[in-house]
Length: 336
Image (cartoon, rainbow, N blue to C red):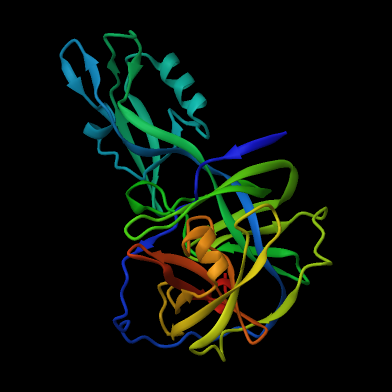
């Protein structure tokens, strides 16, 4: 069974800028590792472990319009994890509790970043449906397409994306568990000046790549499936210590399932930059530019190689010039 993946894991869109980053102390780099080079298109289905607040809506009651959740103090990005002492992991579980609760005040446990907060919410009775509601827009998971950057040869652990998966209001998503599947890229919306392009892909549900176990500012991490064969994948040392402006390449998949190597130029190197922007890169491969216009959503995580060494991964695209973007140093990814 094939499942169409139409959501894209949040690639930042950075306006073109070549100003120097604020001075910072260079990271202490990890011991050089040997890894399998990725470029593999992957579909992720991630569970947030609760009902995440996306926004608010009005409940039309006899006394007027109101959003009980907003009135109680909830914010976009909050994660509702329990109601009346009952654990909540899905939208259906939350709706079931609301239906049984009726007009009584709800005691909601919410995670706001690292902080746990309890709120009392008095539901409003909706005139149209006669059901009690709290006036909140929520989701319990996210799906999308990204690129696997590397697989560690010894542990079988992978790193992907190179940047945080962002929710509404640019708040990072949390993760309780997730699945990763091989994708087949079936189409491309080309990147244009002022408009980012994107890859369109099919989740191959019969081809599990592994488990996603961790989200952080450097991407998605987890364990590759024992059934996934790595023996034919290219390998490389992983270090950005000797990276410098000049010719380089990326491995990426913009059609089908097999990564291809494309030429790029590293324009700028700043290994002390801690905001996942250690490189400014420019796509120079005419075939890739013809197919995609440059860097598009879904390519984030594409490994960057220079002189046979894995130095980093693509993370951002410049909105006003899709042939240019940012990359993260591989040590920042390996440190996670």
